[in-house]
Length: 366
Image (cartoon, rainbow, N blue to C red; front, side, top):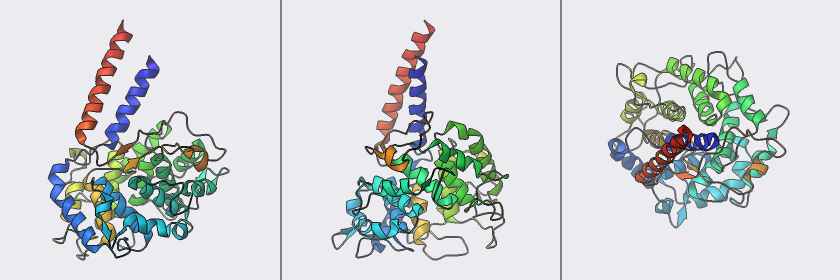
């Protein structure tokens, strides 16, 4: 019976983490304006503007998080998924982080990551795992992306991979891009690490320290910079603020709550204020031009949707992503879910869990 209650509790918490809490209605017009800008700027080959295929992967997650059909985003018959699949072989070979981003996009799009553009992306993730160190790839940023990709396919990262990420946490509670103290913590890597550690109970202390680090980095306008000690300044920017919002939610907190409000508003307010009349988002207040990547990252954050935006179990994924390694038995994979689902279904599901929990508790009391 205790096991049943534990399963119910874990499942309930998992679903709650996947639910937006900031109120879709209040940001509905902002989301739609952002999607309209994306659609009007989609390229003829189906891709989205930016620095490469990784930006199109982010764009796909933004569209799915908003509950929009990907088929509505096509140019000359070419969809964003078609474009990304055509780039899969070359882009996945650039880094394990690139392969992980493709997995996240493929799962969001409902595609098979074991045969995406003719590439078995999960196999590539597994090949990048170093059992001696417990790390995927050469840096923390890629390691966190892989852990997120692993969760998106319904698998669990190896115990040593979780321990490795915890070990790489710096004294101030944050993580640096490359894992070294000399580089220093930054909000972006830290936000991804918090999301990557979701569901890992042995990381409770690490997540608490990381949230405290984020609070120490928040500006008076409610937003977040890359870091307060960055050589490029500490002004709030859309990308860092978006990632922080997602991390706060992944840690089980509400980024619109009083704890995250400053004199001039909270992180969601700051992010919304960076939207241009075009519907796109600017990177910073001092950089007024439309910024593609800022737009792709802002939309899921305005929906208070952490990564991954969708989870779908893939048969055989565990053996592919962690060949020969033991997954953490205390960290059950989150249930498959889509960000665009009707919220009433979530509420009905939670109500059912509450009813079952009540019945179980009554039986225990007897």
